[in-house]
Image (tube, rainbow, N blue to C red; front, side, top):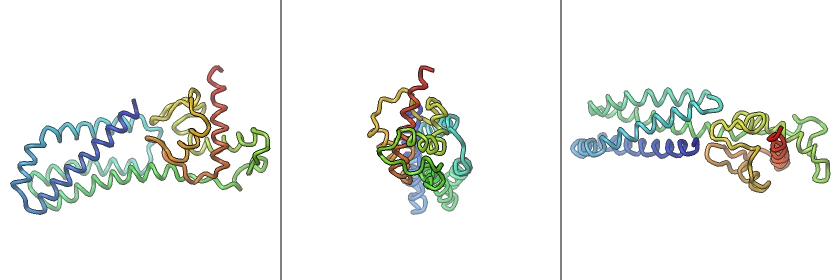
Length: 222
């Protein structure tokens, strides 16, 4: 359900930005007749898009694992842009129209930055316990699990929870995941939907994370 709201929100935001971009261009270019025609034609669709934008955004916010500073700034930009846009286009004020467009696009950009920032976690090998640093392929699996637990607690626990079944912000239940190790590694590296791509983790840390995630299935029947 969260994933459906996420994709609907992204579509609504893109349509909202596109519509306001076209309207702003027409206003700045003094194409007032075309602008008025567009306003009449898109009045109902704009209400629907705006409603979806706010409703899906509100749902995603409520279901978020945590609210970051960037998300707060994004909200301020969005709720500042709406009245500025209404006044700007009602009075055909070019400056206000441009400002509202910049506020909306800035809010969208912050959302993308927030997602990418979440995936930029890097855990230096030196910060790991001595017995868990750089476990070789032939060592006991427990060495990988020790590293994986540390990575999980820094990168994954906020959405997946301690036992992997919190399912916050669209996160999947790791206790019942049917993905094989290769599939898990691909999602960790490339991300999917609301999950960011963790590009900064070392190969060892990713493999260790998968090893730890695999142990979460043992908690399902406990």
